Amino acid sequence: MNDFMTGILAWLYTILGNYGWAMVVFTLLIRLVLMPFDYKSRVSMRKMAKVQPKMAELQKKYAKDQNKLNQKMSELYKQENVSPLSGCLPMLLSYPILIIMFSAMRSFANQQVVRQVVEILQNPDVLPAFDGWLWIRNLWMPDSPFAASLPDYNTLRMIPSDIWLKFMNPELIATLPEALSSLTVDSFAGSELAGTITLISNYLQSLPVYESATAILPGWTFNLIFFSFSIMKEFNGLFLLPIFSGVSQFLMTKLTPQQQPQAQVDPNQPNTGKFMNWFFPIFSLWICSSYNGAFALYWVTSNLIAIAQTFIINKMLDEKEKKQANLQLEAAKK
Image (cartoon, rainbow, N blue to C red; front, side, top):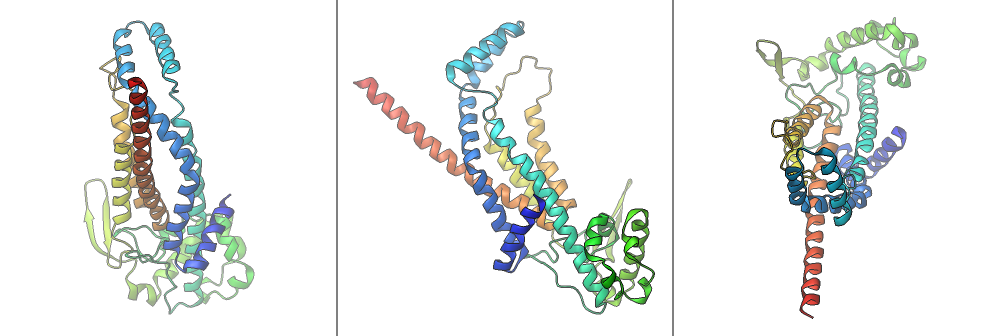
C-alpha cells in the first residue's frame, strides 16, 4: 500500500513539478474518495444530536437504575431509527488511511532525505535541489524555525537500514569521498548503522556548503529549566503548518455535532468530550511540528477540505430537512 500511495504522489509530481502542490492535489483525491462515508457519518450524527434532549431526560429519570436506562435508551434508538455507532463507523475508515499515509510519507520522506545526502556526498560543493513549497525550504524537514533545512544527525538517525540500502549500493559507495572510504554496504545494516550515521553526519557538517548555508548552526539558543532549544540561522520554515493544523483541528471539533447527551449520569465523572476537543488540536500541533513538512501539509490540507465538506454537507442536509418539514406541514393542512 505504501508503494501505491507514493507511486500516485510521484505521478502527480511529474505533472505538477512540485511535491508541495502534488501533496495538495493528492490530499484532495483522498478526501473525494472519503466523501460518501463523510456524508453518511454526518447524517447519522445529526440524527443523534436531535435525540440528545430525550437521551438526557432518560439519563436523569433512570439515573439510579442502569438496566432500565439501557432498556429505555434502546427503545429510543429504535423509535427514532438511529444507532449510536452509525456515525462512528464511517469515520473510523479515515484512521487506517491516516496510518497508511503516515507510513507512506515517512518512507517517501526518508528516501528523499537520503537522496539529498547522496547528492551532497557526490558533489560536496553544491547544495542539493530542495523540494520546497511556498515558505518551506525543504518539504522533507519540519516546517519550523527550530529545524535545519539540510539533513542533520537527528534526521539521519531516524532513517532505517532498508532505506539506506536502496541507495548505498557498491557502485555508489565506490564514488564516496576519501573520508568515507571505509564504508561498505554492510556498514548500512545491523548494529553498524548507528556508527555509520555518525560518521556521515560529522563529514557533512565539515563541508563548506553546510557552513556557508549555516543550516545546522543555531543562531539563538534558549536554556530553560528542563530543556534547551535553538532557532536556526537558516531555518526550514515558519511553524505555520503546525499552527494551522491545530487551529483547523479545533474548528473541526466545533463543527462536529456531539453524539452524547450533555447531561451526565454522574456529574463527578470527567467530561471526556471536552478533553478530546482539546486533545486532538494539541496532538495535531505536536505531530506536525515534529514530522516533515510534506506530512504536515497533507494534514492541514485534509482538515481544510474536511471543514469545507462539512459546511457543504450541513447546508445540503439543512435544505433537505427544510423541504421535509414543509411537506409535512402541507400534508397536515390537507
